[in-house]
Length: 151
Image (cartoon, rainbow, N blue to C red; front, top):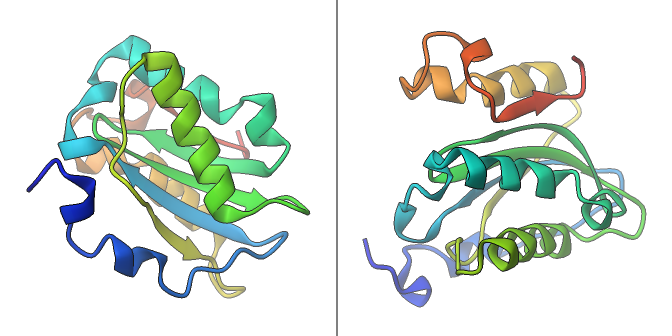
């Protein structure tokens, strides 16, 4: 896989048909550049978590659940009135990169707008169990870089 964001497979296709609806809940996955395990560092992972709770982010999106993995994040959030999906993700990624003082992310992100028939808590459970499925821990409670609003 190339480190050149313009040559990432299907990058432009991820933006086709993307809409941003107020009060819509989205599941977003953002990947580090070249899948470098930036967040294997405890300090970098905690910084990524803190940025999710940044006041500028919280003005545009309410976080429902997230997990910061070594080379990507999964983030479940609801767009606030006046917020834009791409703007929220761009702001988050820029904050993380600015504080770490280097380009962290691949260009673009994957998003899924939740349908009414999808169970929010089931999706949150799936997100926070990611470290378990990846073999990073033996129980979800052992992994420190996740949260869900129902706790």
